[in-house]
Length: 271
Image (cartoon, rainbow, N blue to C red; front, side):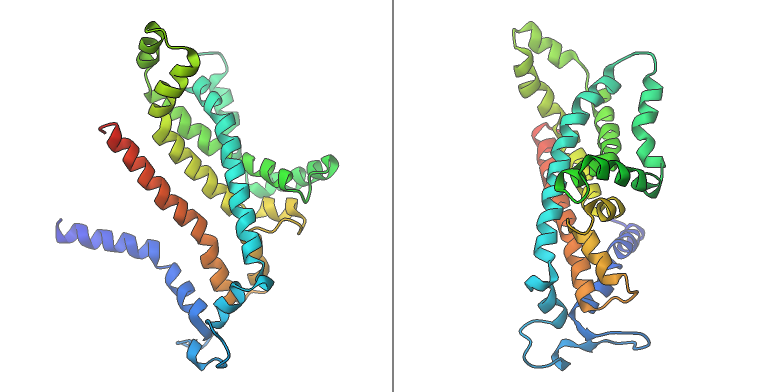
C-alpha cells in the first residue's frame, strides 16, 4: 500500500473514530467542564468509588440503562423481523414486476426518506392516542417501521433486480416445490442483501429518537430517549458520556457480526 493511501485511510479512520474519543475521556473523568483544558481524573474522586464515577452511575439500576438497552434491542429486533416480512415480497414485486404505476409506487415507498420526521410525528401521535397505542411497545414498533421500510425495500429491490430467475426456473423444471425453491434456491442467494437490509433496519430503529420520544409518552425508555433526558440541560457530564457510549454498542456489535456473516456468505458462494 502506498504512503498516500495509508495517509488517506488514517484520515478516514480519524474522522470515524475521532468523535468517540472525547466521550471516552469524559466518561472516565471525574469532572471536565469548560474552560478546563484537561479533565479532573477518576483517582481524584472520593476513594469509596469502585469504578469511575460516570460508569458507577451508568451501571447502577438508578440510571435505567439496562432497561433502555433491553428495550432498544428488543424493539430493534422486532422492527427488523417485521420489516423483512413486509419488504421481501414488496421488493420482489418492485424488482421483477412490470406494471403501470410502478414508478409512483416506488416514490410513495421512498417518501419517508424525504419528508422530515417532525412533519409526521405529531400526526402519528394523534393517531396513536386514538388507537390506544401511545406509550406501548406495539405503538413504538409500528412507528419505527415508517423510517425503516424505505431503506430495506430499496436495498432488497436492488438485490432482486440483480438476481436472475434462471436458477428458480431450473429448480422448478427438476420438480422442486415453490417452498423448496424459496428455501433452498432463492433465500440463499438473497442472504447477503437480506443481512445488509436487516442491519440497516436495526440501526435505524435503534437511533430513532423523535418518534420514540413522542409515542413512548415517557413509559417506553430507549437509549436515545434516555440520553436526551441526560443532555437536555445542555451539559455533558461523565454519566451522559457513558450512556452515549452504551447507546453506540448495539449498532457496533451488530455491524461487526453482520459484516462477518456477509463475508462468510460471499466466500461460501465463491464471490
